Length: 205
Image (cartoon, rainbow, N blue to C red; front, side, top):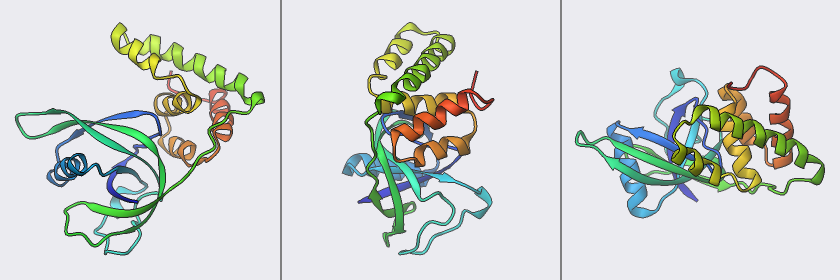
């Protein structure tokens, strides 16, 4: 599958979550509009070291982002007078970035491989999943004062992968740990990892 690559520092897109983005750089404005017009997914690449960002020759892997990335489809929410965009990127799944494609675009186009995930929670992990959900719901009630926004958030926490993705996005304060959660392929491993973090100081309060 070909994807447009949006490399960002300390940002991870989890499946079944929505990431709001303010787009202002000309090449990424073009990228988002092309993605929407042609129904092309956007992969959010996690930049490990911003100082190493450099042009990538066609056919080569992108060295400055993690090869595992979340991907989704962009929805333009607002086009402002100054030309900038408010975009919602709706996470669909995750993939492995393979190599760049030789297109004459100002942004990076990559070949990628979708990574299937195990999304069935084992019975003995359900207690830990429910505990994570309780912590997340408590955080939502504390930090989202608007009742309409709060209710909308809660309505999107129906499936285990939605709970896990939202928990990792909003509760885990270390960005490298967020990326680690994304890179697990089994939801039970994710639940175990997040449960261990609840017993540490790595959560947002």
